[in-house]
Image (cartoon, rainbow, N blue to C red; front, side, top):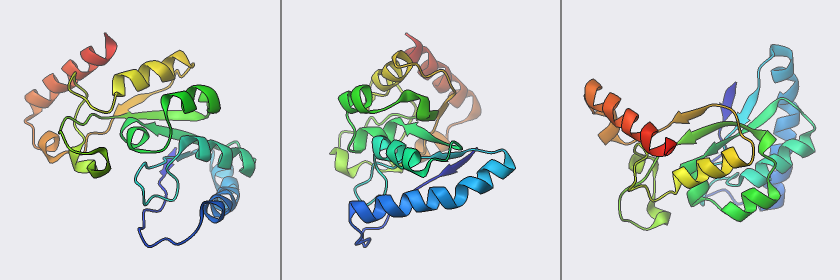
Length: 178
C-alpha cells in the first residue's frame, strides 16, 4: 500500500465542499493506477486545522463516493485526537472495514492540544494524553484485525540508544496490551 497524505496549507481558501469534490476526483483518477498495479492507497487524514482532509468519516465518504475499492484509511491516534472526529463519531458514523492500518503514538507534554505537532509524538505510556489505548480498544471492539504500527516522530525517541528503544517499545506494547 501507499499512504496518501492530504494537503496542509493555512492559505488554502477552498471550502469543505470543494475540497471533498476534488478529493473524490483525485481518488477516481488514481483508482485505476492502484487497481492495475495490485496495490492499495491508504488515505491518512491529518487532524491539523490547516489540513484539507482531517476526518476519517469524511475520508470514508470520499472513498464511497469515488466507488474505487482500492482505498483504505489510516487511523492515526495522534491525528484522530487533534482532529474533528470523536469516539461517538467513530462508533456511530464510521465503518471499521475501511480501516487499513493504525498508526499509534503518544503525547505526554502538558500543552494545549492545538499546539500538538509531530515532534511531540512519543511511544505510548500511561502518561499518554491522546487516549491511544482507548482508541485501539474501540477500533478492535468494532472489528479491526489488521496491523498496528508505532509512529513516534519525537527527536527524543529517534535519539534513543538501541537497547533503550527496545525496552521502551516492549513497555509500550505491554501497556497497550493490558
